[in-house]
Length: 269
Ligand code: PEP
Ligand code: MN
Image (tube, rainbow, N blue to C red; front, top):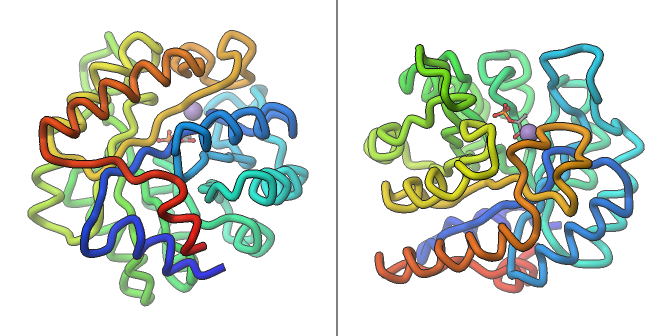
């Protein structure tokens, strides 16, 4: 795998808008395979395939763990889709680097400095989510822990912060998008799903991210959200996702932008 290729084709000269999608968590081979097939048929180039899950409640589903590595391999060989997956512990990185294309650092580990330094030495692109208690400046400092080690393939993701407002799960900081664009060279994505908390809020938050100039979106999509083992209220089903994608495409075209299709990056992986 040429990992630089993933970044070049997505974020190179003629940068196009990227939509990353997939379930909150890998639950079974069948669930992630169905998701990968549906999403790649829609041109989605990168699948969320999360096997280690950072959960606030220690009694809740913690992810399939290392058993998921083989599921990711199978999904990739069947569909050719690229995969992003989270690591929470430096020790998890070894097996994961062999199968995943992009390594995700979640909101809760956004200031885990030893983990940031470790992935800074990886040859994989890093998708870094904003700590939900972090200022934009602190978020940028986190990215510098990675880049200082030599890895400048960083994707910054605004995923909402904790404020006094509790109508939604988190407050999506739309203003972070133009500010990050002024301050860092890295692409800036919006995750509308975690701030939404409820599937009906995912569309307005997604479209506001597009409107504010984000370089892409990362959206949770599940074949059967009510049966999901985590974040069931916020995940979109395939029909909802297809409808949203149409609106995203319409808005992008009004803005003179285009969405990158899966096949455009497959050639580079
Ligand atoms: C995720 O995207 O899988 C996730 C756990 O989100 P966050 O780290 O932003 O809470
Ligand atoms: Mn989730």
